[in-house]
Length: 168
Image (cartoon, rainbow, N blue to C red):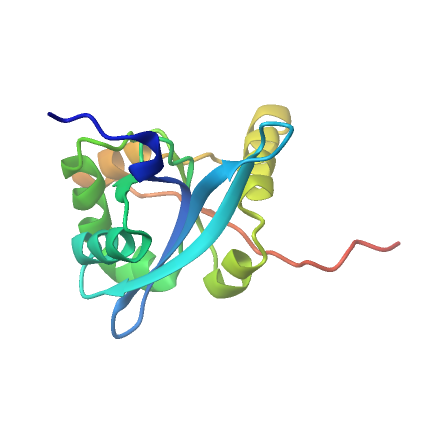
């Protein structure tokens, strides 16, 4: 009874969340694969009064069941980091269809970052930076939740993105 066709799933691999008067969610949804079996992604936006409503509105706009088990990157901004982190943690901990090992990063300009579709580069660069230089801290949702509930400081890597090529 719980079987769902693959075509009926909205597979989310990266999301960004911000909060002004309402929450806004930017989701990278895997639409299909190309001839090299690389994912073809589509950027979808949804709004809502809380995080569960965001996910429901995203599901409604896609006309698919949201599947976040492949989530590998969550981007938040200061509105989430400062005021809404508890709601975000509770949503992911109470959702049995998500993992807690996805990266969490922060940026001051989430809309620019999301619209440039550089999610995978960010994910790859934080991993390389952590592994090669140890100058950054990779923070997963598990780390955020654990430190929050232990009342410890939460360290979230801040990303400043500039699409201009570096010139000497």
